[in-house]
Length: 219
Length: 219
Image 1 (spheres, rainbow over the protein chains, first blue to last red):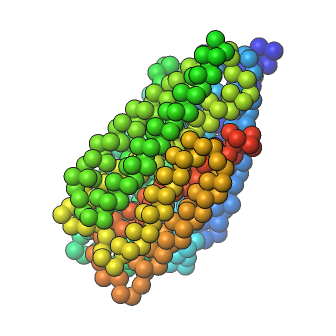
Image 2: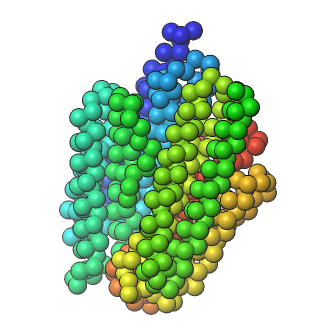
C-alpha cells in the first residue's frame, strides 16, 4: 500500500512533466505562428490546449484522490498540494500560448506586430521559451539552480514588456489602434507566461526546501 | 478533536468571506478611482492589496495544516481543497483591482480612459462590482442561484470587453497609442476579474453539489 502510494506520487510528478512539456511546445509554436503569421500553426496551438486542459483535470483528480487516502505524511502532502498548484499555473501557461495563437488567427493574413516591434517580441519569446524549457528540466531534475535562472528569464521578459509600452508611447509609433491593442495584449501574454513559470519554479523550490511560498506571481 | 476540526473548517469559510469582502471593496474603490482619476483612492486600493495577500497566505497555511491532520473525510477534503483554490482566485481578483489602481496612478492627473469610452467602463465596472458582491453573498449563503447570476454578470463583462476592441478599431478612435494600450489593459483587468469570480462560484457549486470543476476560467 505504502509502496503503491509512492508510485502514485511519482506518477503525479511525471504527469506534471508531461504537461509542462506540452506547455513548452505550445509556446515554441505560438511564437513561430506569431512571427510568421502562420495561421495553421496557430490553429495547432489552439487545438493542443485542450490536451493540456484535460491532462490538468486528470492530474487534479488523481491528486485529490491521493489526498483522500489516509496515507499522506507531511512531505507527501506537500508534494500533492504542490502538484495541484503547479498544474493550475501550467494550465494558465497553456492558455496564454493559446491566446497568442488566437491573436495570430484573428489578424491573419496580417501580422499581429508591426515589423519594427518584432525584434522586441523575438526577445520576449526567446525568454518565454526558455522559461518553458527550464520549467520542464526543473520538474525533471529538481535542480534549484534553475529556479533562479527562470526568475532571471522572467525579469528579462518584464523589462521587454515595459519597453513595448515605451515604444507604443513614442512619437513615431504609427500603427493602427487595433494593432496597438493587439501588441499590448501579446506583450501581456508573454509577460504572464513568465510569471506563471516563476510560480511553478517557486513551488518546486518549496517541495525541495520545505519553504512554502503561496504568493501568486507578482505582476 | 472532531468538533475542533469542524470549527477549523468553519474558520476557513469565514476567512474566505473576509477575503472576498476585501476584494469586493477593492473593485468598488478601484473603479471609483478610475472614473474620477482619484490618485489617493488608487493608492488605497494598491496598499489594501497587501492585506488580501497576507490573508490568503494565512488561509492557505491553515488549509495545509488541516490537510495534514488525519481527520479529513472526503467531504472535508473537498472543503479544504476548494478553499485553497478559491483563495488563489480571490487573491488574483485583488491583484486585478490593484492593477486598475496602478493604471490610475500611472496616468494621474490624466484619466486612463477617454470620455467617450467611460460609459463602457462604467457598465463593465458595475458588472464586475456585482460579481464581487455576489461572490461574497455566495460564500455566505451557498445559494447556488448566485452561481448562474455571477456567470451572467461575467457574460456581460465579456461582451463589453469585446466592444472596447470594436470601439478602439473604429475610424473615429483618436486617442493616443498610450491611451489605447491603457484602455486595452483596463478592459482586460475587468474581464479577468469576472473570470476569476466565475471560477470561485464554480468551486462553491462543487462544494455544495460534489461535482468537481477544476477548469480555470476560460478567456
